[in-house]
Length: 197
Image 1: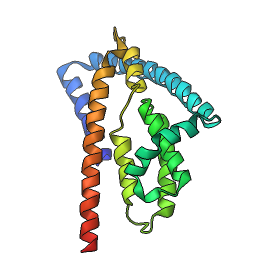
Image 2: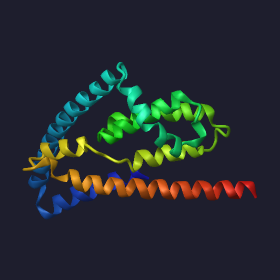
Image 3: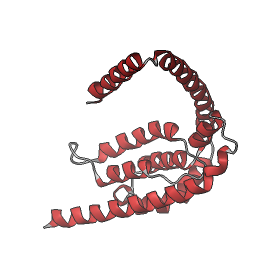
C-alpha cells in the first residue's frame, strides 16, 4: 500500500510545484532537508554508538546480573509463563533497560533476540504467545527515564533546552505503560477464560 501512496504524494508535489511556479523553492527545500537529515543521522549515530557501547560493556560486568535481580519481580509479574527460562528473562531485562534509557534503536535487536527465545517455547508457532504479546506492548509503551533519542533530535535541531521534555516524557511513558500493561493483562485473562470454556 505504501509503495503506491508515497509515489502518488511525490508526483502530486512535483506537479503542484511546476504548475504553481514554486519549482525553485521545492529544489531548495529538498537540499535543505537532505542536509538536515545527514546532520540528524550523524547526531543519532553518535548517541547510539555511545549507549550501545555502554550496554556491551555492561554485558561483561555484574551490572546486568544486578539489573536482572532488580527487574526479576517485574518480569515474573509481566511474563508468568517464563519463570524458569533464565535466558529469556535476561534478554527481556536487557531490552527493558535499553528502552528505559531511551535507546529504541539499540533495544530493537535485543527485543528480536528475546522474541526468538520466546518463540522456541511457544507451543503454537503460528500464533503469538501471551509473553510475546506482552513483550511487544512493553516495547511499544516503554517507560523512559532518559529519552536519549528525543534529546539527540532536539539538540540536532537547535533546541535551546533539549532536556526540557524529560518530565513530560516520564508522565507520558508511565501512563502509556500502565494503560498498555493493564489492557494486555485483562485481554490475556479474558482469552484464557474463553479457552477454558
